[in-house]
Length: 278
Picture 1 (spheres, rainbow, N blue to C red):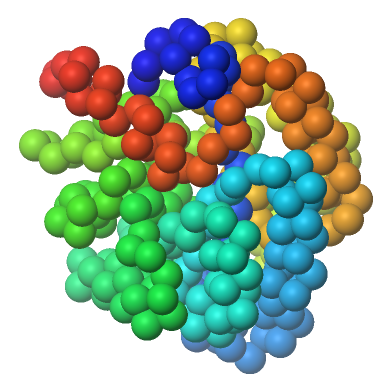
Picture 2 (picture 1 turned 90 degrees about the horizontal axis):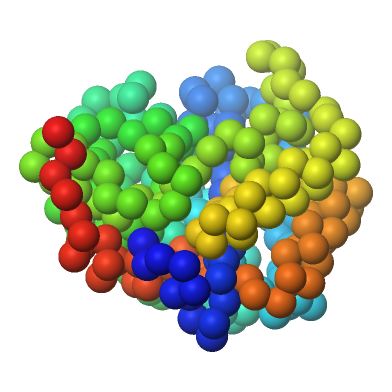
């Protein structure tokens, strides 16, 4: 990625706020038995009915563009939400169709996840997605190849750096905008009655995310945060996110950008300076 002082408008750091809108698909992808579990499905739906409106209002208040990774199933079930995201000027990126983990399904099923998601977006008038994020950040060689074949501009599933870089598999490569568990709300608040979970102090999220941003700003690099509307969309948690946003904005030198914009900005210098990985 471009070096110090290379972000637009003289900014010296960059931030992307991203939201995985899993909704019901987040549970249905775990297995057909979840179709009968109305309570757990309703929590996913809460992310759309309550979480998304609150998030959109927060982003509008601070004039921040964001990226929403949306499974095809979620888009099908909630077309009004899709329209609201587009009207607000946010990016809709690919997050599979039924939120299936690529490492747990066949290559054929992996291809179907990509293709069905693309078909839904086209049917709903969503611009062809430029970015992809795998379920649970599990990326297989087969899905990697599919992303290259379909011409995705970037992926956001891997952790090989703390700034945009080129992720490689054999002779293929894709621009990667990395993720990390410390920058995700799910490990703090995600709860599953079958497998436990956590309901953490939201102020810990604020402290950690401010520390993450401050270290990124000191190194003049990009940071991305991963959130889930049914998780961060609860008001007391969203209040802490707003405090993080205010801290970042008050520095006066941060570029808030959608992931596709970051990929477009980073790609030229990454391609020019690419050195084959041993």
